Length: 60
Image 1 (spheres, rainbow, N blue to C red):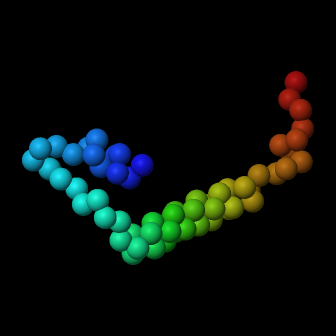
Image 2 (cartoon, one colour):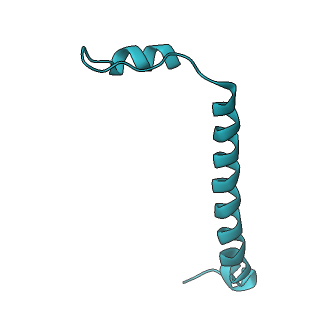
Image 3 (cartoon, rainbow, N blue to C red):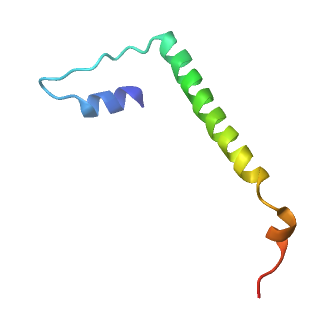
C-alpha cells in the first residue's frame, strides 16, 4: 500500500523516499497513543457529568 500511494503521488519533478525507517513506526505508535489518550481523557470527564438515571428516562 505504501508503494502504491507513493507511486501515485509522485510527479516528474517530485520524488519521495520509498524506505520506511523503523523509527517511523515508533513515532506513529507514540502519536497514536498520545492522541487516543487525550481523547479518552476528555471524554472521561464529559461522560462523568452525565446523569445516567436521567438519561434513561423516556421522553413523551
